[in-house]
Image 1 (cartoon, rainbow, N blue to C red):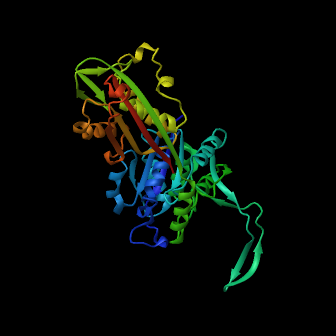
Image 2: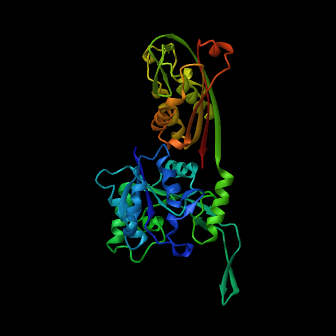
Length: 381
């Protein structure tokens, strides 16, 4: 079953203040839209993401290479319709529709909506109203309203694709008069039942200027940081070069191992597995398995970083130390950093590679082999 997500980002967000629409303002080191889009791109159950942009913002599309970009309309309804039509050629089974101004949406909320669609035509997160409700007139309380059965609606709102497409087409054709507050209203207008699932207080909508400070504080509080360390050793054997951090370094010997014996990449891979509490390379790629004989170590590193991203983590930085007397590492550090950055798909300034000796002590001092240590930091916001 394929699931797509539509992120509506064509509004102007004037109530939030600032010189640019709120989706392009900075929040905790990135733009609001960056956080929102990444929440769905990194979710393991979401296959495609459609980002609906205002015509004036299409230049921003370069920053979202992994998303399908559609041009929005003058109203939210029209923008959602544009996102749905962008999927018609290859329709998914389910679609989630989300407001870009909710950048703190969590994976559990997304999962609850998807799970509810096993038996429901539509599903949406909400929070029960717990505060007393007043009616007011001329700045004074004019009455109260029963809060029982009232909910604060959130997104993403999920539906079977064909059903919500038909509902929005009917709404656009005028069969459902007037504008809709959200997609649940469109769905219900077409006769679809919508199940309420548990929302999340953190899944706030940025509306006014003060919401940015509130969101910033919440993001600091909920950030999940993982640190892992790795250590590896390989002995020398006759050869012409050592593979270190993806680079062939000329030397009178090579490193002995079941794979290509890239001691630096092995240490970094184990650091990533360690941060995830996922053991080490040997558990994922047993040396007893002949298929890994002579394997290039980037296979292991790609698996580790892929596992991290499937769980919503990104590599913030890593630091690899090679311990040997020879070969000399310094001339090759730039190429090593570039190779590792390419494999894990992060900017090279997040990758550190350095070397030290053991002052002629121990097996590395006797030039019997090379050791490596690595530390990696993963963050899930």
